[in-house]
Length: 114
Image 1 (cartoon, rainbow, N blue to C red):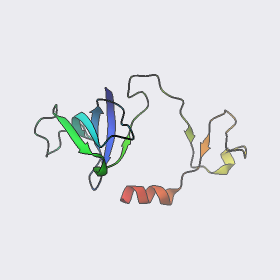
Image 2 (cartoon, helix red, strand yellow):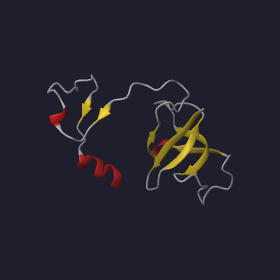
Image 3 (tube, rainbow, N blue to C red):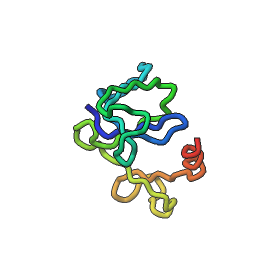
């Protein structure tokens, strides 16, 4: 069971859920349970929060799976910085070995609006 994933559905607010398995590229649907809003409450369109929910993948924009959600050890995390190139040594890596990623704020705004 993969717990506390965030489902970003087309034209809907994000929802939290528990997945039975990691989604695969060949899947036609996303199967989950324990569907709830981001504040932990039952959405108005759900009769029983413990039901099994099946979403067609064409209604899912993306699935956000937090580190350690599948019960495995946390994967190595990248350091994300919006401070710009001044925090980098010029090679794309910081002095401590973490990758320094520059975020495109315009791209993030368009994703949020979509």
